[in-house]
Length: 163
Image 1 (tube, rainbow, N blue to C red):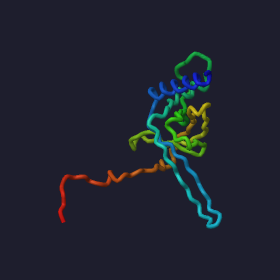
Image 2: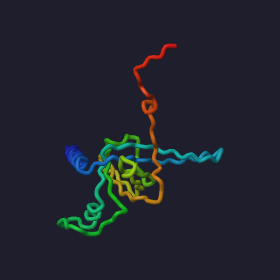
Image 3: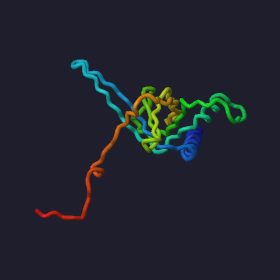
Image 4: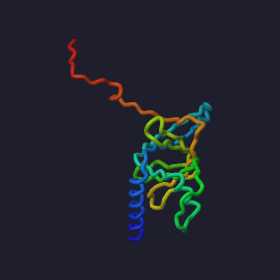
């Protein structure tokens, strides 16, 4: 019963944070497989779109890490490179695990998109979610995976063509 109450408290806290700081994030997992017989190297990327990941502001992240158990002070060290991202386990497939070699892309429009490499990934107890510390990458391309659907290429009209 105590475990169930703790899990409900964590889920409620995640829900509140998702409403306040939720942003669209694409989570990428990159796996490299080496074929011993041919010597061929195959790189596979898996994309997991997350509608509401908790992307904390950099100022809040830095202040929270340096001043625990003290009253909140304004100002402080402003770190533009690193951020904390919290992902609810409901938003990620059960077979998916977040690792240090993964990366995320934050933003929906091309001018707002930024790539962050995962520096550390910690899984919550009871599989409630993940806390990621990510670092912004400015010198590399985004390396996105684009999905096209047949509805994107077809033009639907009401005209009937008789042969």
